[in-house]
Length: 150
Figure (cartoon, rainbow, N blue to C red):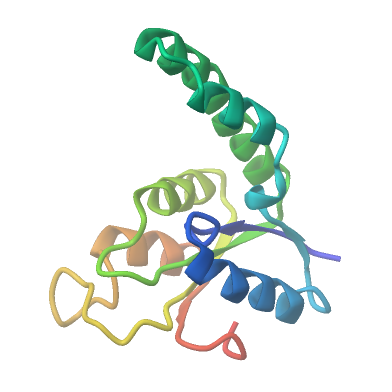
């Protein structure tokens, strides 16, 4: 089965986690989904860091975790056959945009999902940021407006 990396900011907010779960349920019969939000290795560490009084100590601990999460996400993108990227919002999430660029550089096929009806392109000729849209389309993928379209 084809393995895809799900690039999205959906795990940040309680209001979007349900949609992320729904999307994965819909994709699972067709592709093997690697979801970086499933990596909860550091949940206890984040709680511990929140109780650290020293800002410098807390920031140093967060920097270690940030590096490891970034490394793990990059490895997951390298190991995937392609990517599905969530493009909703006033602007594409910066982490998602970076993951799109990385996947494109690796030669991965990328599909974007934009269910948001607000305008987000640089001009009326683009659905989202023109560079993000270019990487998606140049990879052989497309920007879709429905899960069914994916």
